[in-house]
Structure formats: structure tokens, C-alpha cells
Image 1 (tube, rainbow, N blue to C red):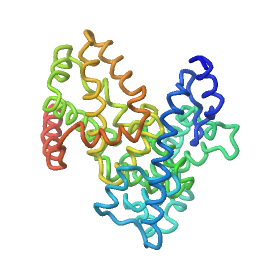
Image 2: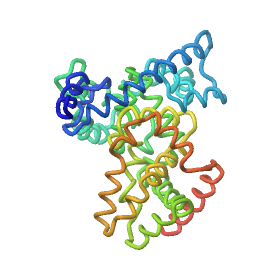
Image 3: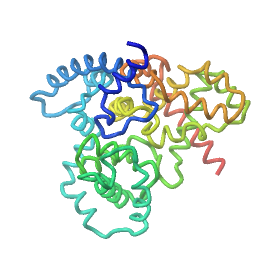
Image 4: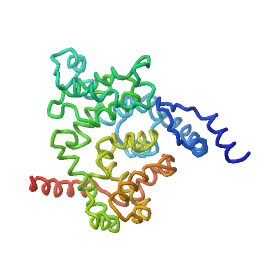
Length: 342
């Protein structure tokens, strides 16, 4: 069978729409994906057996070294919502506030908030068949409810672009409106420090923290940025705001989120540093600002990020030591510098 026939055969075997409802892009490499997925399926099956044993009979998922190890190796899709809810504290919040979500939706609305959310609904996952108006049920209504309830719940944040993508993924995984709301609350309210408030101070701080980490761990890349006067926000703001949604492949994003809900926001730095370190030589070939921007788009595509199991192993080895103490210290320093600039 020649290469063209092999590619055609793979295209016939791999569904055009993925398990989450996303249409595969025109340039999707069906053959490479089939090869990766055949080995990944074996890993998934083994993990599913181990998770079933871990969850059997236990009242819930408690943080432990065993759970941390299991999470880093991936949570099976059928257990993902339950484990995310437990590890993030969302389940505890939901249990302590029965009926609260419904009351938010039934209470007094906010026309400006409603309008801001409506504007973004059609822009959210146009490549996902479940979010189309023709879908039955159409997840746009669910997404609207979750974002509206959250904006009313956290009026200091309201609604910010990027939250639609995050809430959309939560809905696809939990298939439950109220659980999606409480997971969004865990992310925006606790796990991501001040990313979505109007001033976005936490987001700006963490972009500066990444710049400092690159300076410490990958000085040649930092020097390239400095030489061309490139602001990190130009390259990575969407990585942070969207938590890699619409940037990395779906399965890879979900594996990152498994760890994000358990270990917190430092996972974002591990992913970012791994992407940059793995492609350091490629990035250093850039000789202009547009070239640097283009290379940062390219490093989020290809086999390295598609092969999510290997990628997740790399994020815990490639960047080296990255303690929360270091992150906290850098955050304090970068935050103070940003505040002093006004």
C-alpha cells in the first residue's frame, strides 16, 4: 500500500468528528493519529482498570501521593467529572450550597452581562457539532446559563472572554450544568489567581513570571525576546486565558486540566516551559518579531503535543525543579513591579 492509500485508509477508519464533538481540521494527520491512538488505547485501558479499583467503595477521592501519581498518568473519561469535582473542592461547595445555582438563574438578571455573553455564544467552538444551533440538545443554552450564573455569582469578574471556552470544555466533560458552574468557580475563584478580573493583574503577573522562569531556565530564548523587544503577552496570553483550549489538541488539554485541578496553577508554567524548551532551537532561528510570533504558533501543533501521554511525562521532567515557593516568590516580585508601573 503506497503512502496515499495508507493515508486514505486511516481517514476511513478514524471518525471525522472526535469523541467530544469537534470536527477534525482539514490538515488533520489521520495516519499519525491512528498510530498514536492504537498505543494510547492500551494505556487508557490499563489506567481505567486501576482507577476503577481506586474509586470502588471509597466515599470520594482524597488528595494523596497515589492519587497525584494516578492523575498525572491521566483520568479516564468516565471518571473525569467526579475526580475533578472532588479534587478542586467544587463538590464540597456544591454540597454546601444546595439550590444556589438555580436561585442565581431565577433571580434578578443583568442586561449588560447577558448581552456580553450572548455576543460570544456563536464564537464558541464553531467546529463543535454540539454547540451549533441545529444540535439537539444545543449546548449553547447550557453555556449561556453557566456563564450567566457565574457572572451573577462573582460580580467582581462578571464575564470575560476566554471563560466561554473554559466553561464549554467543562460542559462537554461533566454533561452537567451545575457541576460545570462549580468547576468554573473553582478555576476562576481559587485555582487561577485573578486572571479574569477587569484589571487582569493575576494574568499579567503570571506572564511576567513565565518570562522570569524562561530567563532562569532558557536564557538564550529570553535574550532573543529582549533583543527584539517582544512582549510575552503577545505570545502567550491565550495560553493562560484559555488554559490551552483551542491551542493544544483536546485530549492533551484534558490531561493538563487533570493536573491543574489537583496541583494548581503551576502546571500552566510546566506546560509553557516544556513547549518552549522542546522547540528552543526552532525558536532561536527566528530573526524578526513576526517570525517569533509565527514560531510560537507552530510549537503548539504536531506530534509532540498530540501524543499526550509522552507530553505529560515531559512536563514533569523537562522544566526541572519548579516549586510553589519559587512561583509564589516570583509572583510577589512581578506583581509589585506591575503595581509600581501603575
